Image (cartoon, rainbow, N blue to C red; front, side):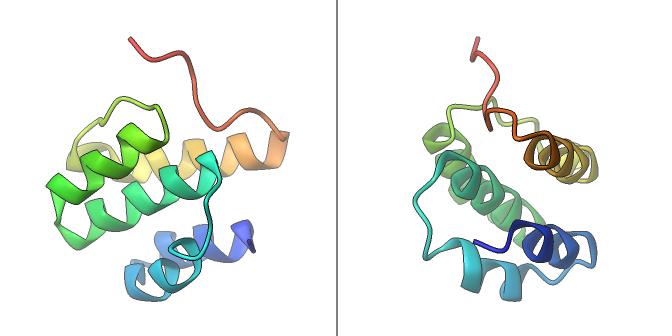
Length: 86
């Protein structure tokens, strides 16, 4: 997956193009990004589903920009895509 490209698309608000990429992937990071896609889309039930798949707490739509930044930091550091849930 071209993670930097997906993150650039998400930052630009192009969730449709980002969705085309992440829906083909099965990693935890892809699930997190998929959740962000659906948050931007406004489909919060689907976003919650993907956050659950990524084993992350769903922060709500107000935190979408922070989530994109956190995903970028996590991907750049090679860190696990999920913090402990709970």
